[in-house]
Length: 69
Image (cartoon, rainbow, N blue to C red):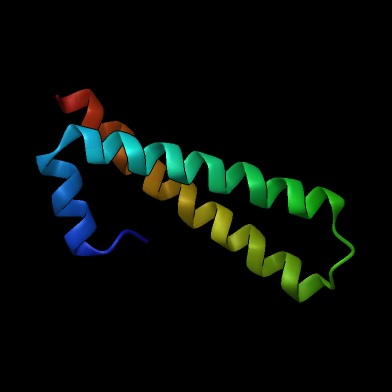
């Protein structure tokens, strides 16, 4: 989840918000690629999938902020 300081900065500055969006999109893509190529155990894969889900929720918040602007 996005910490409160980062969230405030994203509310104030569209450039920071866009950078955070790009960063999260890249991280999600990389994690998905790791999962596809991985031979990790089930618990580790579950952890990565949970992180992807959390990142997607953060992205939704940031996308909603963009819509308000």
